[in-house]
Length: 162
Image (cartoon, rainbow, N blue to C red; front, top):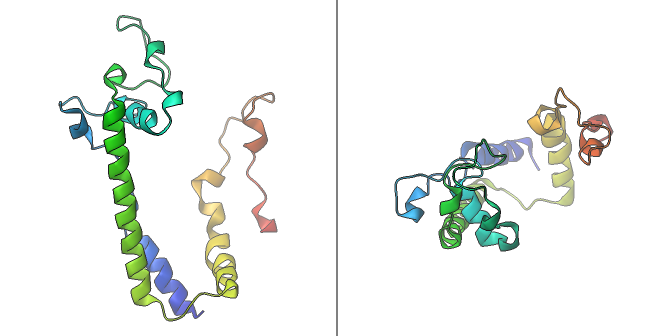
């Protein structure tokens, strides 16, 4: 694969917006209250749609219980599994559109079929050198407690071995 093809592929992937959210889908609820932010009724509704065993609205605190309540955004008691199904279907549709757009843009620029060697070259020349720039590969200031289940994955791996 020529360097120019690799650069074209990279530009194809970085030019398009890949931000896909259902956060603006308050219209699925038929009111003007919004989705409730993080862990609010929008996200709760979507979780209820895709993993119903993970949502138990009977465990919500009483409406007059003093807060704040951990991981509970706004309007959670108004969550709706049906609205979550519609929101999730919208997100899937948006992902499909973005995938088709990416494939079409790539196909217009592609000059040859990628071989395994080409993929290895892209990895070593384009991706691997940039891994350390990823926010997920930076250690937070405060480590989890030694007995925490998250402790084993807290340290950033040594990327020089890749």
